Image (cartoon, rainbow, N blue to C red; front, side, top):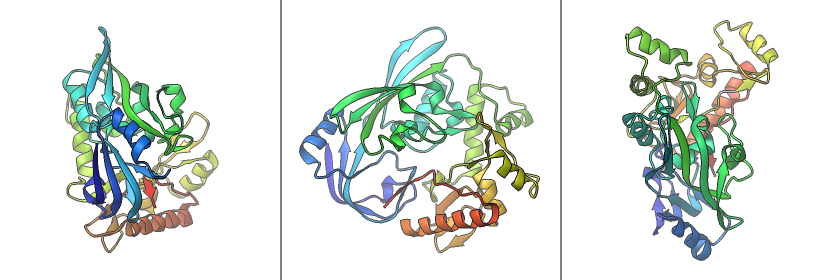
Length: 337
């Protein structure tokens, strides 16, 4: 275990917010986690920090920050068609996806270049280009702070939803994920349900393989999304809203280019980025806080924006979109007070 006092968090959050915390704990084993809650925890409030990619820190943090730094990929089971891997929480997500593709383990190639660590992937139930992490999810292991025990959660117990899980509701702040187990395919049959992705391969006359999908997603995302090393951001800031069919019909009667994605319950998912762009906010900037000029779903820090600056921009976007469309956007990012 490493402990740092009065520590700057700028390099630990992809927005590059220059906030600090009282104590930063690097938890490098399950034993470190037990040790923290037995001997170091001085209150119930703490911030669990993964890759810092789905996070907006508004101000300095006057409580502990915990960073689980557990690494490794373990082969659990393998047969002719599938492989089951236990991945430690501290593993970088993109590097894990790259590892899978290079070893001919398929299913996550559509999720290339998503920032963050493996341990935070189930919390957010990350997804992109027609695939969500839950599709290959088997189970996860972690420390239940209330029971003071390590527990294993099945897919059903995680209560996955759209960018949601039990770890964002009932178990928020009560559970520290230490590893995630995924089952991947050995059959190279990529998911091309996302039109943009299929068009990319078709237009370039590329074979429809997982490796080409992996490379395509990297290229597409790189052209749309800023690299956190060059421009502070957290990826998609808002969830794509799910609205009723009546609401969809109302909006599409005026805006005929609105695309809808029907859901099983009869509702329709629409693009938050489309709403923001149609509201005239693409590229909108106040100081160093801005809506990214290449993709309206992204909020960015051009250098010296505070967390409060970014949040005020987010609130302005929410209000403007609601005033124009009657649809209220919800942050996908975890906002830390």
